Image (cartoon, rainbow, N blue to C red):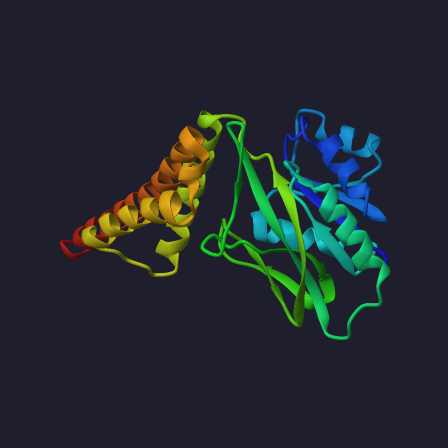
Length: 261
């Protein structure tokens, strides 16, 4: 069974060569879809052996749906530039490729670990542990809003009990800025979908997020790094709902002005 590895990029020069090489361990083709890098990402990807395409950025969901239409093979493996297949996952994928495909299998889910401030944080049943990253593109479509997109599968999803290693955030500033940007996008998605919240709901959600992240997801085991990670993830929830409340306020203000005309 042949497999295409897919990475969507913009200014990932520090990651792209290793990411392409990592996918080449299990993939028969590596495809990079870039959205206007200015740091040499496209050139580095091509030199590493990837097939490189350029497409204007229209959002994570659209970019991923477009990318898998370019694949030479129906089965694809999606990886972000700052993610790596662990040695055990590489072994698991090779074994999976060597076996006859089960009739109703349309996808494969794997686990993921996050590296932050020198610590590995492993997701659990409360934090969407299983990520669908291998799938048959003829039975899949990426859905969702501006962020937190996911692939919708028609058919059964198997599992490989091994990890993707996520080297996502360079430092606290990087994490803070990314979560702030994602929170703004998520708030706008909620607003466009018609979601409205109260002050009490916002306060309760912020408090519940910290309890979930720090205690239930056991980030306290990560010491200071775990506390910072849980705090900033809670900050994401706070900014998301504050932005949503702001949009609600602007909506009411606009309606009031229209009623006075």
